[in-house]
Image (cartoon, rainbow, N blue to C red; front, top):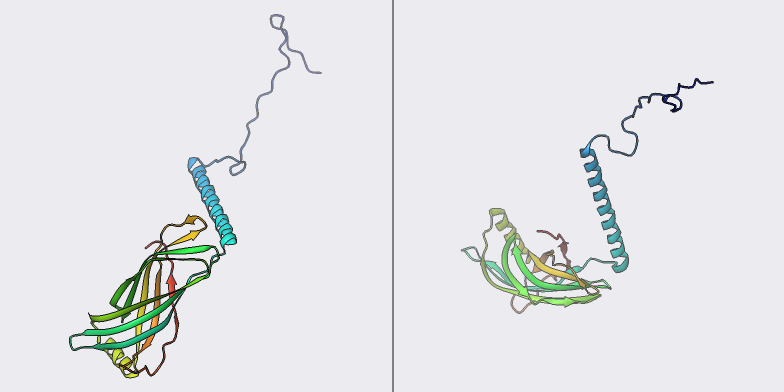
Length: 232
């Protein structure tokens, strides 16, 4: 039986309180940050980034489930070349007509073509360019556009490029590139997106038609490549 402490001034204070034992905290255990504010800040940033990524992923999934977007398709369906020859001063005389189609396969997405620049290039050098009339393309719609290039342009060819031109002249078929520089917006219901600047490139093999006679070979429809980069 424990000894009772003597009364002091008639008051009893109970048994003696044992001293506290030194507690040992193992690092890395528990919910708090033990490595300072830097660790807590990094953890907070990581959690915020993770939350944003998950939220964006969920929004993208919801968007896809609702609108089921499909890529727009560009084709050059017809090309007529009646003049394509160089003079001694490296001046190219040309007369080229193109028909192209733009197919919007989406059921719920419309497209505003705010700016349409068409360029014709030979050996990577711009020969001519035209601007077409802006338009709106509705759902599941195919739009046909036409453009014509006629005139003269100085084009400097290297020795190898001049050799390629001579071979094409002999064959009667020329490698001509067509590029589209676009500014478009998408319409999703009543919402219109910000403007983006896709670029479209079509590598064409265009047969030469002499005056009054058809080309020896026919033009084949070409599918175009699209670069949908948002920032340029």
